[in-house]
Image (tube, rainbow, N blue to C red; front, top):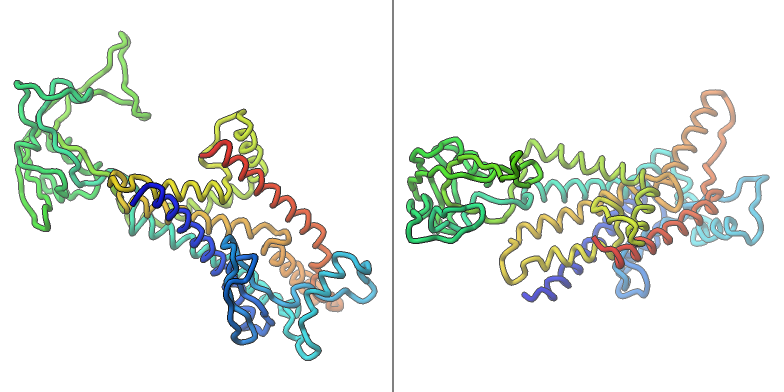
Length: 437
């Protein structure tokens, strides 16, 4: 497969992933709403012109042309105006109320969303939010615990022909250089190292530790080759290796010379692949990802400020900063195209990156919809919570029922929030075009 085709395939996978994530989010709203009797006339994947649809159970299900979202229509989201507090005729709030209730007939008023009890409203509105949380957690858990993180594995990529005079500099072999221990033992590229002197191996770090622990003595090494297990004997030799610091940079002495230390050397290099995270660590890493996403939502203004500065060339773009769907699409394309046709980047590593990207997207949708402002789901959740608090307080103090929370009054704020979201999206797309990650 060509790199161009692989890039396009990666973008397509992301678009389909977004469509499915949003579709399941809206399904999380629709299923409890229909179960509680709310009238749901439409459920669509995508926006724009209708491509295909069908009717069932009073709901039109279908697909529209632009697969960057979706929606479900719940009738009666906004309550009628309270007696004595009429809306401004022809105003935005009055028109929104009318539109919200227009398709409910006289005998269907009980099917309006606003008539649900507070617990049921919370179930309906939280259903979509929690769906994205569950999807994000599952995708990340599969990426970490089933596919594994990209890393160097216990599979042999290359076997050195000799023990050269300067291994770290990649010096070539000479006639006087001895054969490398791995070559002498009969190891071959593609061998999967299972144990080294009895120590089980799952990653290249395990191999390095086993070689270091056994020094220059003979070590029995069990490998898998062509579906069969072989036992070979490797006798490492001691060579001088460069000392590196935590950042991977060579360490120099006071006189400026690079420091070295003696280490056992076998003459192997690892293959790039994926290493599964131990089951006991997956939950902690996923929880950390959820926490980081929630913190990122809190710091959106600061993140947008730094993204704009990066777009203006005033600072470097942070890889942990905000990103638009355009930027995510570019990353998905590059992930898919990495090593296409060469095998340098294995499919498992690309699959991990794609699953992580979709998992992070779902966590972002979860966290973003927690913001207690319309038009986000969190705004409706906040309205239901306020209604519940008012009614609980009224019962506790013997006062009359205050009625439904009038979320329609928050529509002007919702319009401002919507405008800010559009502005943020445009700014991030611009940043992703001029200062891509």
